[in-house]
View 1 (cartoon, rainbow, N blue to C red):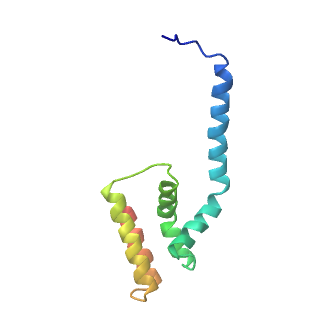
View 2: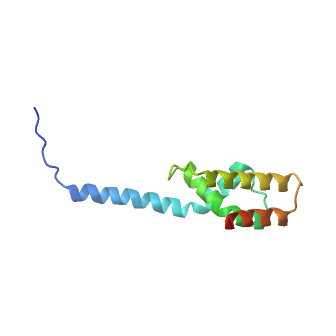
Length: 112
């Protein structure tokens, strides 16, 4: 039977783990604008007016973070919000409602 031996240089190993975690956070922060553009492009929403983009920006950032594996949610409120965002963006793009109507509807669902 082998006996366990104490690890040496634990401080160095912890330091490298901290550097790796900080490097990952830094990479995410510096590429935030790129990722934001990519998520709008991925959905085909890069041509949305700024007013609509601003209303759904936090939703898209959270969705991007979930796709990157930073967290996972099964919350029904989040799922319903995503359905609402998709519905109103689709309605605007198909000409079923005006930009202001979509902005108002999406702003109202944030407050709920």
